[in-house]
Length: 499
Image (tube, rainbow, N blue to C red; front, side, top):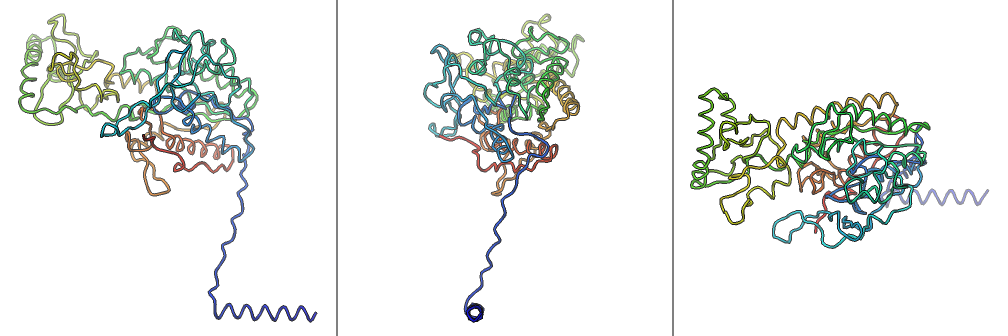
């Protein structure tokens, strides 16, 4: 007892000393580790089904680092905090992105921003990719994202047959990891008996039409996808039937999941970067061009006088240039009235308006020479841009109509199958309009090359953009299934690869 009193007296002296001579530092209370839970979901065997967006494609290629930074891999890392298992990926052989078939290159390397020319420009990384398509990997793989896949491709036997790649009958990415030459993507996903899935499909059912400048066919009304071309718009009823079948398969054993809708493809940098009026002209050149188009404009005026066309169409088709840096390009518009029966020189030609969307690749084409030996044959000025370079308002309407139908189906099926729903369309619209603030005070946006949200192909997100998508999905999962997953920090992922 005496020892106890002595100890207390010593401690009392110590405390008095501290209070008189030293500053007392309040030690922070250690934060208790968060107990992450899956709620009612089971993340033990997560399988991701989709296209390039699911695979982690960016910068015009699929490569190891992009696959590692795919949104499914980010989700899998979150799921691992709440009972999730391993997540296997059919990795490419390197970070170049290129691939060969029988030793012959068939896929190009990824793009990177290079300053070698003195001004930043996207260029392919150098070297030959070591990925050989015929070297089939042994699965199964949790990431079943297949770049280029449309909805109906996921149920097509032989879509991963190496023998069909060279003739365009099979997909080179899926051919690398299909379980057999006759396998289907959804079949290979289903045999893994997923406990949880993400399904994001349908983008390519309209995207390829859009990126080709509307060069495909709107197949609405045609229920036979075997007759479709690569750039065609998928019939909404075909899409609905396929998506319903995919969900039946994925939920057959009680799996929960997430279903994402289709963003407005015309809001991506591929269509918002090149202005409709990028042509600078001095006085002499403007006068020269106006003289060259005088006969065309005069022919339109004559047909108006004859009552063959309206004044509105004449105004729409009349071509005029002026001094300055913002002249509209000249383009071919197949939706204009065909006047060649009156005069073969009156082709379907007009100047672009703010409603036209020039594709990203036109930035390297406008201003080049159609004939290297003729300095006046300037593409987009003296020589009209072909259909592939511009998505006209009529073509945008076809895309938007199909997208709206797809999204109506997706929302209804998400409710029917009682799975989480992510409105990727609303997300992209907000992203394009205002961007999203990050923890360091910066804002990530959709601006091409500088915004940090999209890669250099102008279509696919950057790793940082994929991180934003992953967080959007985590929010939907937490809300639907009662989990408390933390998401990811977008600042941990790059917004742009530099050279």
